[in-house]
Image 1 (spheres, rainbow, N blue to C red):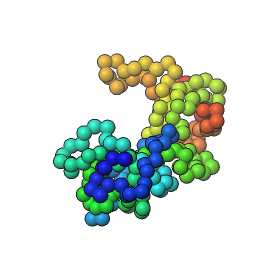
Image 2: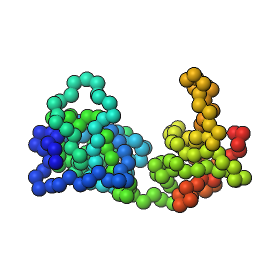
Image 3: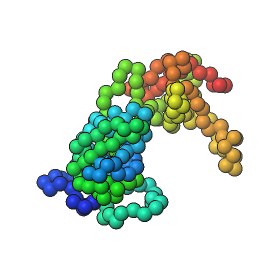
Image 4: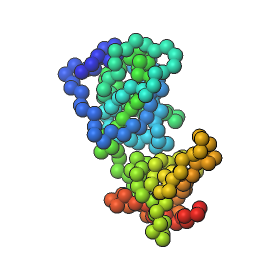
Amino acid sequence: MTLAVPGGPPSGFDDPPFPDDAIEVGRVMGAWGIKGGIRVMPFSKDPQALFSSRRWFIRPPDAPLAGPRPAVVAYPSVLRITHSKEQGDAVVATAQELPDRNAAEAMRGARVFIARSSFPTAGDGEFYWIDLIGLAVVNRQGEALGEVIGLLDTGAHSVLRLRRPDAEAAVDGDAASDTSERLIPFVGAFIDDVNLADKRITVDWGLDY
């Protein structure tokens, strides 16, 4: 166990191991309030994954942060959440490992992970984005359209980003010449079936669309 912030982790606790099924769900934007709260920007419009577990696993930022930062030995490996709630488009929370505002400010930029196994069960016809990544997409004729490599949120609905089977990368960095991706709206008008067990999505979409 490493000392991360003033006060350190509560005594008598052993840090749990980083989950094999950990999913990055948000990023700490900074301190909230004066009693050690943090403000987290979730990666999903529906931040229920952050409320599904009282253990948030922490990793440092991918790159150094701009601007001054409080001196800190290391980020804690886990935050044991005592309270969390939505506030606007963010989630604010307090944790046993963060006793004051200085400790919370030192968390800025930290990446927040939750075990996939702790996510709430999705409703009928609902899917977590992470479960769609890597699925093969075929049309009603059985023609391969590509593999899901990501999703876009347009506000009105989500859009599947596919890597085409015959993908050709952009020429000399010219995005306009990039034919490697195919976009399909993730709406009932075009999505016939999502079969997670078979890792396949069937759509009403032509090869020439």
